[in-house]
Image (cartoon, rainbow, N blue to C red; front, side, top):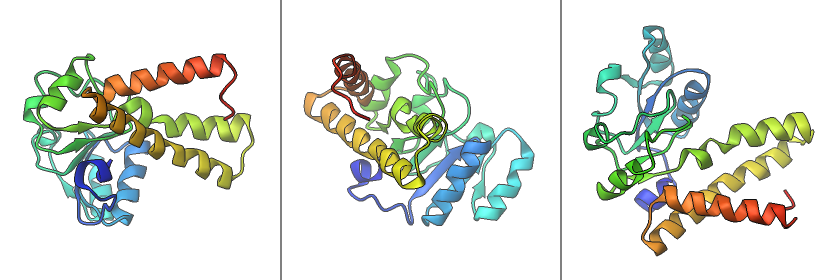
Length: 193
């Protein structure tokens, strides 16, 4: 995501806003802090302020989360956050997060693109949870195997961005098309992982 948006995958020094500090958002915030990102965090639970102190993040009121200027916004709470009303409020170059169903409707992807905000489809970004769960519980994979499969998310995201850019469409449309292709390949037995 950072490479597509800023020309470098480096997160050190990038300002990143994490909305929602539940189990996943907390994990993401800690990883971003370790990577050297300048964090801005929020949650509806005021007790989550302790994490802000722990990771050296700036706390913002939940009502200000969408209007706080950051490089990347990370929705890690509820879905439906990105709407025709909220997209004009955003002050970021990119949105990528683990929250499911971030767009209230498919057309919202066009609103993001029209504003020049790169959106990483949540169906790609949040695939790690499913990959990890199936790898551990069903396939009994080692950590090395899981790490390799999880690295495929970045490859898929690059493919989605490339397709969107070259076909003049949104990442949401490119992700849907890629998913459709992969389903057809799976039906024909062409997928091995």
